[in-house]
Image 1 (tube, rainbow, N blue to C red):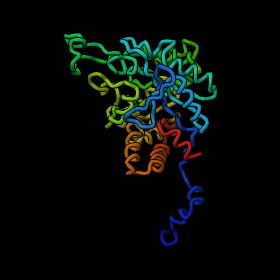
Image 2 (cartoon, rainbow, N blue to C red):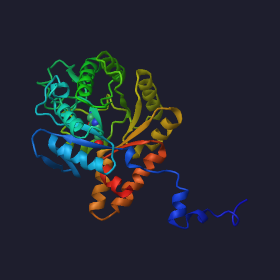
Image 3 (tube, rainbow, N blue to C red):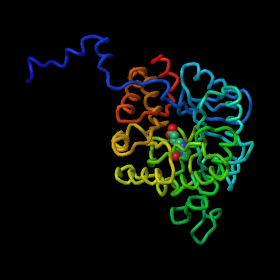
Image 4 (cartoon, rainbow, N blue to C red):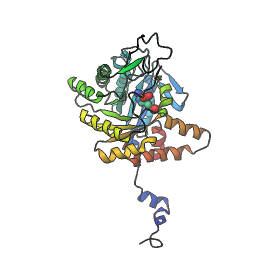
Length: 340
Ligand code: PBG
């Protein structure tokens, strides 16, 4: 049976019908709102490449989170801009680190807000890489600092795990509800799980940035988080964007190591990865609509080339439809307003 008996336009006649048969729904409860926390008080500094996104001091972060919460957003994820960077990434795991302070303040002021903590070292080390850097050439890195080539240094996997695990424990102790490692070192989920359990934090879940691709779409974030690598790039640890099967391996390994939630990142250029992961795994699945995805929509909208509200909802629905039930997005507040 086909046309003229079957007419798919019958169910598209008006908004009530369209709404009745809609397959994918967005809800503010599934959105996670990223916050960039910086030192100081009363600081609200707009990120040049992400208009509408700010570096916020702890007091301002609390204010921003309260507003988001009142719009129905239940979770935030914290990134930190420390006072100082050093080779030990002290700012990442110090008890009075910027994210630790923000987490304490948020849990005190908004106890029902879920606070996720991004775990990575790039914001906390001067070189801006996500793990510990060791010079591997004949020269020290200092001497080669002008423009070290990839032969001059390596990102040391296992030494990084120790610092990442220490960071995770410190964040959880400060009140972070969910630990979200984004560094892409091998074995970090297992190392973090072990350290959390040993610290009596066996109830703290891990949301793993399991399939995180080396991406040009992170450009604006690196300005927001002051985490641009000072030399080289992240291709020796983040995934090659061409590889879907490898993404499945990354996810399977993270499940074995104890991940509770899996994430794909970026979102829109990797919808097929989200869809494949949804088919294959039974864990809750998240996706990160990253800074570049936000910046592109925002730039076009500010030029009046596209309709911001339509496009941001369409982008979020596409991510949801691909299979992610949790979406990290800088548009969380706007989306919640539109959905509310
Ligand atoms: C830290 C981290 C990055 C993002 C989240 N965590 C940057 C990167 O890996 O370069 C990107 C988020 C975004 O672009 O919005 N490793």
